[in-house]
Length: 189
Image (cartoon, rainbow, N blue to C red; front, side, top):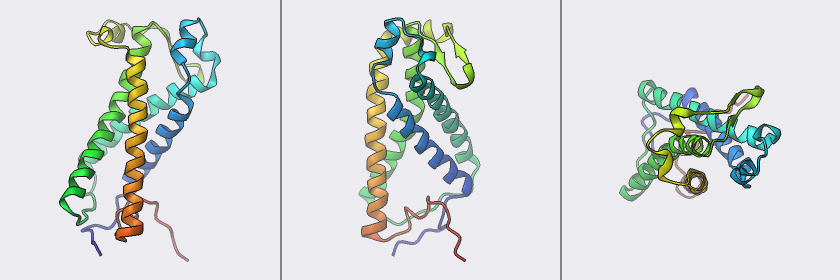
């Protein structure tokens, strides 16, 4: 049916996509549950492995996203698929929202931690007790960044879910190569 000018994304683009998807999903699963409330009660976040993993995965997501954006600037051309105008617009909007959220979520997490005076705790015992540049930024007092972070976390999961449903729709209903372009390549013997 729809043919791409290039049938697949390059290996690095696929790796960035799936590593990011896994890290976001696991961070979301580990994230909910009142971290802010626990820390306001004086609980040391380093004593809760789910908090340490959530924050470490958040830093990983941010790092992967920045590296991925740099790669997008230099990678081989992405596959192009023929699709209706509304699908093309919906795709661009969903991808733009996902990129924005991948950058905003770690930023809102840092703003939440710093503005409330909580440490950033990472795997390997890495800990940043204070983040004065973030805590004293003009953005810090503008919102309850923990609430914003939670809302954005929910939003990224909803949009990523719609993104996945759209990919499956392309594969099952339209029978084009949109989903296959991002899947790992299976060697046939």
